Length: 260
Image (cartoon, rainbow, N blue to C red; front, side, top):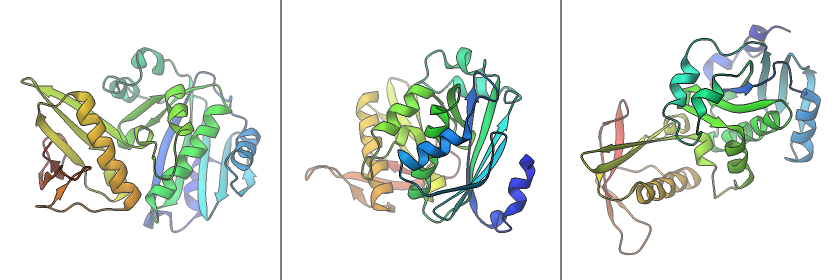
């Protein structure tokens, strides 16, 4: 079955959202789909229909979702990996290492859009299983500007729980320092039908605003909260941080500004 026939199998795909990423391979054609499926069943306790699968192209059915997996025996074309590596600070030497990949695996949940948190948990489990059962070096999720080293992605996966989301695997957190003040913004919350968040021009340290941002995003996604203009939010009885919504500074469109 060819790659493009994936997207013809389900007529409703165009009406839904998909989650799309790529596993970077140091050795092309190194994924073992049978071991991937076994890990999904044994480690993650998922019911997997793999009747339409092989090491070249597969469509798995898991809990009503269609999962497309396509092995590509060439590197990702263009310079997007190198460009993205430049601002993904968790992968030291990422540009040098990631651009040496020799193949990649396209991984997509084709009919997502019903429950973003649930779907991203599922995607994370599948990606982790592919990383474990191929000669891979990392994962690239271009729609969220994420390029993560294999070990880092797996460490976040190991610690994830229903109330402790693996946010670094799901969302890019941008950092800027200007005129002695720090800012942080999210890129990827829109995929969860949430407004991106910015903390701007604060004298708090990067570590402090990072902790605050992680708490905010985890709370919003776990509790399915929508923050509104003029409200306040806090994580202690005394803390009341003002919320405003206006055009983004570092992200296109409207963003939530949290005064911290």
